Amino acid sequence: MSLVKTKNTQEMDYKAAFKLGTYNNSVIYSDKGELVESKMQIDTEQLPQNIYNAIKKEYPDAHIVSAYSYKSSRINGSYAVVIRSANLDQAKEKEFLLTENGTFVE
Image (cartoon, rainbow, N blue to C red; front, side, top):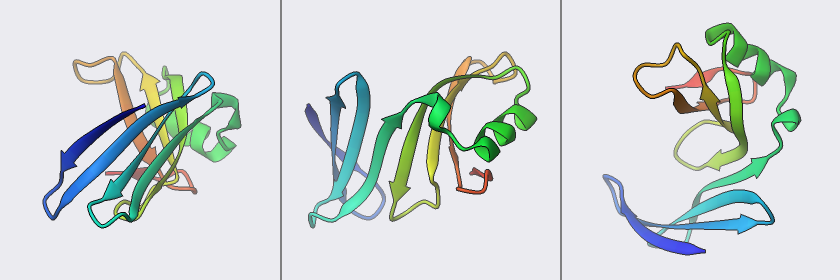
């Protein structure tokens, strides 16, 4: 497990990245000890169909590299998904946040 201090515009946050088995996970706590964000890796097969459909609609050639259950007190999102696609600018892999209903979060 590693612990790093991050700075957002309002306060200092502390991020812990850790593995549970082969899964990569992370949590971020505020300097007040409040949970700000959690990202827990899941099998890509565990993604709801509407999340998969939204990704394929936006990036038809996408390959889902990894998927995470995502919760944040600052950002409206339910899943974080890393995809590989030739249609991405420069980087061939990118992480996206999606809401429960399959809407991409900007």
